[in-house]
Image 1 (cartoon, helix red, strand yellow):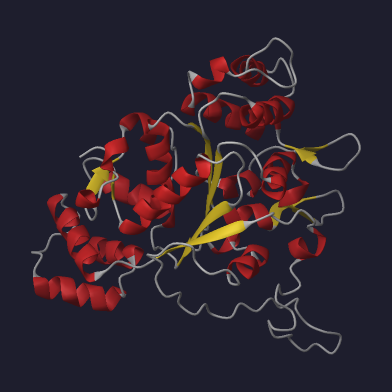
Image 2 (cartoon, rainbow, N blue to C red; image 1 turned 180 degrees about the vertical axis):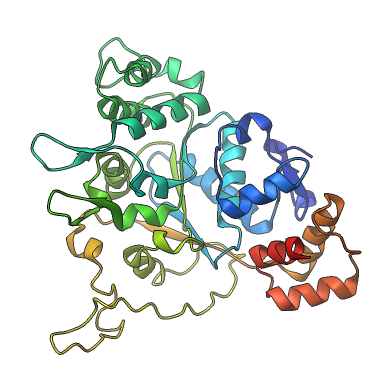
Length: 373
């Protein structure tokens, strides 16, 4: 079955639903593991889980408020399905007519690939090509909605006009991007807005770029990231929901700052599993003057260079924890892989029980076991 607004029903829990082609075509990369799964099956599909249903309910409720009060951050073990939950949620609200501002791979903003330049006063860094790509993405995700929204910064222009000018180079791309985002959020009588950012932790760490002194540039020094940091620090936007998903698969995306914030927060969803103890991460720079490594209780952010200079703390964050697969979910996914010729093995109760125990219900480990046979 294909995802549509009526899919969110208890009778569909545990079923695999295909993402609409119009949606999946706008997600050039969902991550190495999901991309691989999508290529191996006839049609990209994801399991509709109870945790995703609960996340959709939370976002729906937040988007109906007069003022956004929190940002939901999807957390969980490595490979537990955080990106899958974000994609299904974004697809759901786009199909309901919401304005969606989505970025599936935030780490690419700061990977050192995009050209960058300092502002005239040296207070921030611009990424013109990236800003242009983000404008193209916003237009692609919301082809008709932007035509009806007025621009804040350009009198008599619509948001669509401003975006087109930024894409064409008629105005600086970043100025257009900032105007487009601010105008969408400030517009009256608009549909609800969902801001969905995968690899949310990449917004809170040092980047692969360096300044003129060969020192690492922090993500909050880039103008594109500043737009989202300002939104998170202020909140209060009408009919707006903010959703981020943490990436724990790629080590270079890790953020000590965000990890420290999230580990203090209880999960707001009832389906949250018991969080596994995270291995201690020791930053070798976290030493005192006697070269003694400081424990987390004394140095909770490990002398994280980002945390030391970041001042725009998010106003409020709600942690949504994605649990591992249950026994029945492992059975459902094995049958799905078998039907799509990913798993060349007969699925029996014995096999399900064995793989559930071996993988501890981790979706990524189940998938890797299937493709390794």
